Image (tube, rainbow, N blue to C red; front, side, top):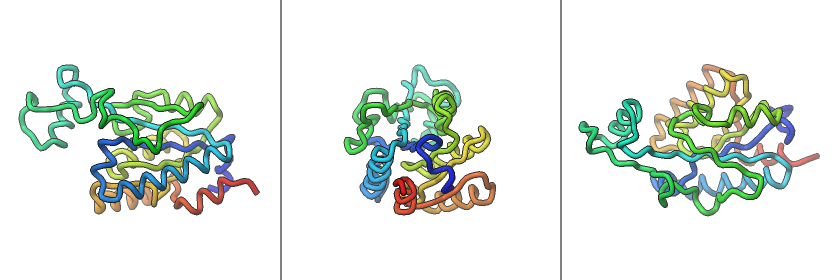
Amino acid sequence: MEDACDPARMALLIYDMQAGIVEQIPDGDRIVAACVRLREAARANGFRVFYTRHMSLPPAAAGVAQLRTAMEWQHIDDPAAVVAAFPQGSPRYQLVPELTPGPGEVVFDKITMSAFAGTPLDIALRDLGIGSFAIAGIAMEVGIEPTVRHATDLGYLPIVVTDACGAGHPEAAERSHAALAFAGGSRTTDTAALTKLMAPG
């Protein structure tokens, strides 16, 4: 991990830190603060910063998979009752103000859980010669685990910043951490250790 922590080879990925998601997490403010700390360390030391943002399709434009997932999350049996949880442009869809992207930072919208599915993230990272990224945000058990698994299949070294990853269901998040540790291919650290590694010297 120490070898990967080079601004020419590693980026910071802040996952789905949106108003409508952060508000669902009991310690959302703590996760925001940890992400801000990581983002400021990345900016200060020349690491590129990318953000993801989950977008809900309007029900009329949603297909089987999108409707099925929405029905499960909304605990309903009728597809006609589905509502878009994070409509594009809505207040719930926006990143929290503390994590407003700066110049040169990029937000990728997605309708999947993996940040690599259907987004330009893989192309952007490869074009920069980046082979590793630190990931922080919400939620570990919903989107961060699938993103990390997808990244290892693509040949990246993902680094999960454990104290900067929020969870709606702590037990499910623990299972995610255990599954990733068992599968191998990724690394874990915490905010203090990573920000220290990001600083030169």
